[in-house]
Image 1 (tube, protein in one colour):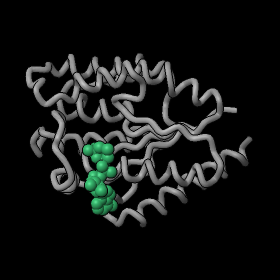
Image 2 (image 1 turned 180 degrees about the horizontal axis):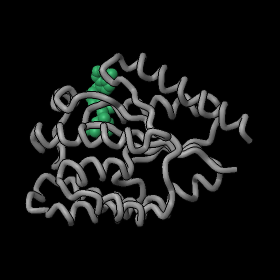
Image 3 (image 1 turned 180 degrees about the vertical axis):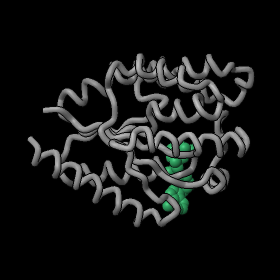
Length: 211
Ligand SMILES: Nc1ncnc2c1ncn2[C@@H]1O[C@H](COP(=O)(O)OP(=O)(O)OP(=O)(O)O)[C@@H](O)[C@H]1O
Ligand SMILES: [Mg+2]
């Protein structure tokens, strides 16, 4: 009995948190054991690292430091929470995972493939079964976030940075095409939620047939 590991990825403001909560609700209605978690964070140690990373006053943070802190936070999260939950057969829904590091630090910060390498080390083989990619332009995402709340250190980066993040995701979608499910995130919340539920139900059905 192995659980299902589902990650949500996409630019800032593309609707990841909105949709992951709706999928969690759907899973609960179906009676599944579901664990909703987020990155960076998810455990006390990982959340402490998150505060360091996102603090808007930490303007001097070096890009390599940033990448290593994300990977360190993720290592703890996988070991303490994600891996044990999957071993118990839970459905784990994670708001951002290692693809965020590759898109933000690897592509947009220009740190390159080293970011993938340190993250492979951090996750020790725990990879998502499905990644819902919320496909929305950086400008549209930024407009949604700016309207809704104060922005953290990464969100305050300029639009060219966020465009590079988006381009990074488009590459990841090709590289990891087996697990990527591309969702047109410019539609209404309910339209998107319905497609995600359908894709999820279909995945569970196929997996049960294979077992
Ligand atoms: N399909 C949608 N259409 C319009 N607005 C939306 C849609 N989905 C989410 N929003 C709104 O856009 C804002 C950002 O959504 P949300 O927080 O879910 O995005 P996110 O991808 O989690 O962002 P972040 O990367 O910053 O965590 C929120 O105010 C949310 O209510
Ligand atoms: Mg969010």
